[in-house]
Amino acid sequence: MSNADDLRKKTIPIYRIAVLGAKGVGKTSIIKSFVNNAFDPLYEETDNDIRKYRRVYDINKKPSDPSYVLFQIDDV
Image 1: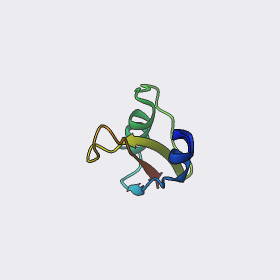
Image 2 (image 1 turned 30 degrees about the horizontal axis):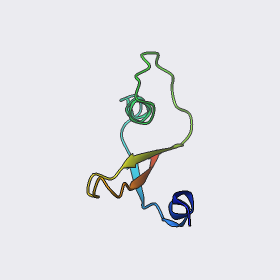
Image 3 (image 1 turned 45 degrees about the vertical axis):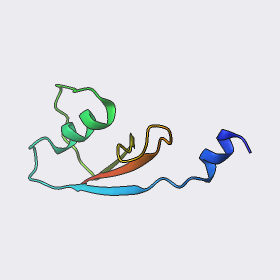
């Protein structure tokens, strides 16, 4: 079995994060900065709920056996 087959068999834990707060405080900007590793200084009002995903290296695992977790971030 190849390494690619091993990776396909592994399940990635999913952590759901809900970001709550008053209108206009920067929830969406913080989420976009985290997901895209960049900050957009232009303000754009969010009209509806947004869901973003980011795969992150799990630092609790050994470097010889890299593992990832998936963050599902809901901007409500």
